[in-house]
Length: 342
Image (tube, rainbow, N blue to C red; front, side, top):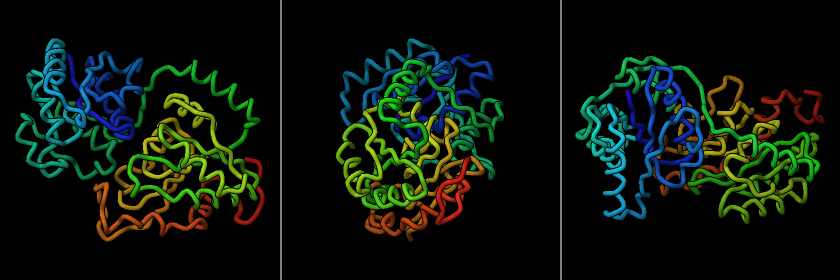
């Protein structure tokens, strides 16, 4: 049996779909994945994904490219297509795949409810499917697979990236550090760079070195954190996404907002403190019992609009002392003292 996973973007959403793909493989399915260009890096060479279906980015949609993509997908002859995104565009790709069955969420659980018209088998979510990972896993019940609650994140082999990261960390003299990641996709979900800098100062007083990681287009943002820290933090060497996975594996803790970097850290088991505002951490925050979140809740919550006058400044309400207290609690450090052996 061949299953097509339709989860077009973004990095965090791809991470949250990986447990469902692992469950599909355990259920005996060959797995193809329809995905846009920027999110392919976690799928290329992934042992749980048999084939990547290259879908053009919706922001640069061209009919000719879309027609070629549809033709390529249909050549794979999928038995079932699963729309994990709940949008018109994802439902359309699932329907156009030519699969005999198209599974997706029933209307109340879709981001664009009317898109359920394109779904042939609509799955109603159980009350226990609160986290988005479990929402994805619950969709598999339409195939007779019950995996809600499992947390398996297949990733590509990163041996080469691990070697590069080890050399770079050694060159910087980093053996025990906390990652501060100020970047991400939505400006309204991000904590101010200056607050990250203040946090680095407090962490330095506790004996922790802070490393500021950054992705494409975020180098200046990372530099602002370093400047605000007065040298208490250092800027990370440039990393690919898979190199970030390896540096996260070696970190004592990751502090980040609701971004792909936070979700990747959770996937590899690194302790985290997540910073949340408009989005709900119960739905897409850390899932390990020991991990913590700091959140100020806007009146519009949960809100998934990138631009919203109600929540646009809510992340600024989070103060450094709140985040530091969560870090102390997560790492078992007594407030106001130097780090103890962990």
